[in-house]
Length: 179
Image (cartoon, rainbow, N blue to C red; front, side, top):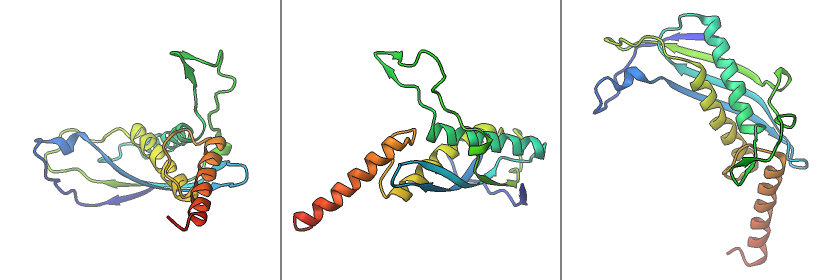
């Protein structure tokens, strides 16, 4: 884990003290999509957070890595289908969650800073890493397939459907004079 010390800057807002309650994060992901099978693998992820001072570097790293893997799982495998307000599965034997074998290479960096007058102190790290991982994996997949992602999880079936849709749109434009 890399740690960066940087001065905190006040963000203009009409809500007094709002910036004390929130943390910031940014992330990038690299995915590999097999266009023949539709399978998607998250290969690398990098996260940068600004959550105040890190009280426990190992605890912080565990929260960031665990949250990133949960977010990746929400984006790629976790799916409980429902119909008529009821779950279709009778048990969780088909409910897939990633294991360490599915974990991407993960780089975590934190900016440690606090605004003068901040009374909150360090912020929680688990939720922000999970939330941003979902979005960054979906965004990387959209970039890889050249189509917007409008549904999760990113199953092979959905990816193949999107690729087929994209192919039909491009083939159609060639046949009708490019309209």
